[in-house]
Image 1 (cartoon, rainbow, N blue to C red):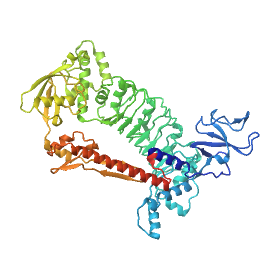
Image 2 (image 1 turned 60 degrees about the vertical axis):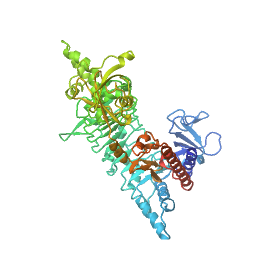
Image 3 (image 1 turned 180 degrees about the vertical axis):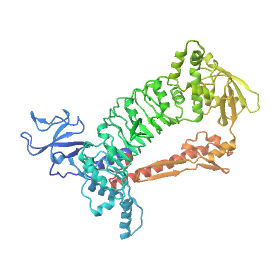
Image 4 (image 1 turned 180 degrees about the horizontal axis):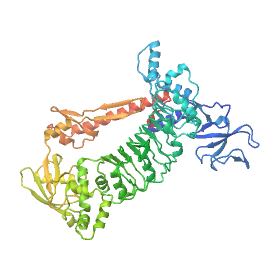
Amino acid sequence: MLSVLIFFRDFLMDNYMRSNKIPEMVIGCRVRHRGARGVVKFCGRIGSLDGEWLGIEWDEKSRGKHDGTYQNVRYFETSAPQSGSFMRPNTVEYGCSFVEAGKERIIECTNVSQWEKIESFGSAKADASEKVRKEMSCLCLDGTLVSFAGELSVSDSVLFSGITSLYLRNTLIVDWSEIVKIISFMPRLSSLALSNNKLQSTHCAALENVTFSQIETLALSQTEYNWNEVSVLPKVFPNLNEFWLSYNCIDIIESELKMPSLRLLSLESNPLASWHEVLKLGSLSKLDGFLFFIIKFLQCLFLGHTKLKEICIPQSGLFPSLRSLMLSHNEISDWNSINELNKIPSLEELSIIGNPVLNLDKSRSRQFVIAKIAHLRVFNKVAISAAERKGSEIDYLKNYGTTWLKLRNAKGMEDNLACFLSEHPRFMDLVKLYGEPDHFETVKNPLKNMTQCMQMLKFTYSDKPAIEKRVPNFLTVQKLKILVGELFHLKPQLVKLSYKSSRNPDIVVSLDHDLYSLSYYSVEENDIIIVEQICSSSLGGELLALPNVYRMFCSPDGIFCYCDFMISRCEEKAIFIENCTCIEMSIYLEHCNLHTKSIEQQCCATCKALVLMLLFCVYFVMIMRMLHDPKIPDFLQ
């Protein structure tokens, strides 16, 4: 079914807004052929061949067959040896005006007969269409042949007056003068996407004396711009909140970027020379005798795939508002770089997926990062709970406690102790928070056999006598609950565990992750496992509070379908089966005095049938829409 949809999408996109009208001045025009874009550099006869030919240099350097020569005669110049082609004028697509393409798209998207279920007759239907057009706020012309603005009549200006978001990615537009004219057509425009276009330099007359203070979001990814080109834009767009510059040619930041209102900046996949360039974004600048932050309110910074090798923040106070930092797929390979991030006072979210530093200690790298950065709440797209932070910090103390104790107690080791504290700058803060680790609480060397993996633990439950039992430290919390259930005759699903250090009884850590092992929580010899039973009534209350909603998002402007399944109700208690997997459903049924598996199977079968029916209806509607309407949903593009 999906392959059929993709076929229809490709067919419709190839035939949408096709323009084969050859312009009078063809040299310098942008053209498209089978999805490839290029610029015409020659028009005329070549050699002894009949008729006229176009000499085209393609944006993709390997798309052509030559460098502009034919039979040792050069007809035009190319920037790459295989980027030129000769083609007939009627075989390529030429650009169209923004007004033409925009008007057609708006009328198409606001056709009441297809988009609005309005029962009306006569002029009422036309009035409804006009109302919808005036309320349209987003105009997407991605992948079209737009290359110039065109002339906007008074009657057509109404169509564009309400547009707040414009998408012109992957088009044929080049000149900033045309872009400036297009922006002037939409007085309420606040978001502009021009990514993946071969735009001219920003150092042009068209941008010298213009300012668009209403634009808050600007996307210029994949435009081959460097920082010299980018530095012009803050004067043209002074109130940007989001600035997307991914996949460009920014290697050095030559000048300051004075954008005080900027909240989000993306420099992903740019060949940044070093972290020193990034510091320029958070540095202080002096203006009229006052110090101010160049990007004072920057909250989110994307620096993935930039080949950064190290992080060094020479002074605290840089990036005072930065909350989210994305450093995935770089070359950071040392823990000192992670230590430096603790100097960013507001940092709450960090992503370093794909960096070599995570391979230094794969089993404990997450714990170490959490312990090293005090205010972190989300790491590698996974939230950090209070219990996980506490466990990570205690484990960090135990891992390096032996080294710290030896250096502190030894004479003449002051320099080595100072070196240790520079490598672990948060260590003393953790000592103040949890107390000093003693010799018995520090982590020992890796154990070599099963006997050494065993450790004696004391289990306590309610007022019953404590039970001592030897268990392996690689035992998971889930299996430990089963063991506890056998010891105290409890149901494992209703057991809640925590442990208390035998050396520091004031420290109690909750064992709230079933798949984590005891060694992850740093459970040691003679520690006390505290067993609690979850009240069945409270469990039922939690189940009642869980709404189980299955949603399917089909297209941003088309269909939004959702269905809400309440699986069953038994003896005035609602039972919700999350994700329709029926996992542990027998536990829930016990609270309803229904000990049968037939209901479980019936619930799963019913849900599966409903979901399959929903999918069939969605695909059917999508196909019917595309047969009558060439607009392609965004999720298929």
